[in-house]
Image 1: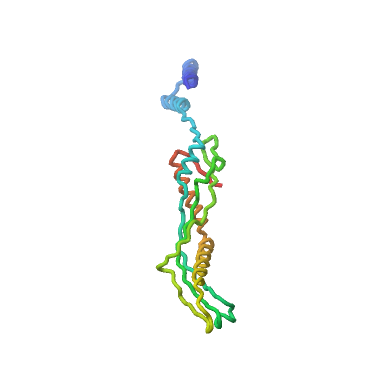
Image 2: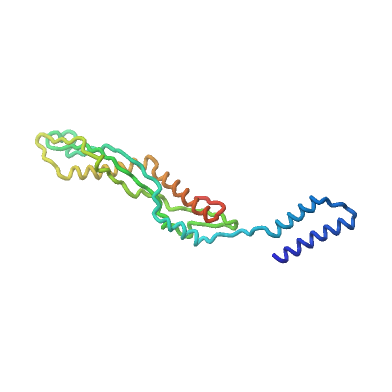
Length: 207
């Protein structure tokens, strides 16, 4: 930096002497502009390249980041026996399932290879894919809407349990179809972007 300062000062002195020797008149505004330019060159900020390891650890601390949730209602029918025989010896149950589905990104899975920093300090991030973590039935809002047995049928104590399992599966599929994982990915990117920009990263891009 000292060498740069000496070089710039020498440049200004040489330019000034040249103007005097040649009889040229230098306007004061031009002199001030030259000084500002020299000062900007001497005191130009150096680019600070973030430490990739520190950035990865900072993101990992967010751990299991829940980024999306949705309320889903599904109507599921369970039946013991075929359509032609259930009314005689079978059983049928209609179940209304209301549930909350939550999804997010496990940032603890992020590795150093998932984050790249270029010479200008800009960062490229490859986040782990989002996952559906929970499908929670609302027991107060979920209910058996209809239950029928055939004339000669007997109650199956496990039928409702099996229908509930199918309901959870149906709710999960409905949440997937509504794009819950896409929303979870987008929210995770927003959170990580704000974290990195807050740490001084000038630009964040996701792949």
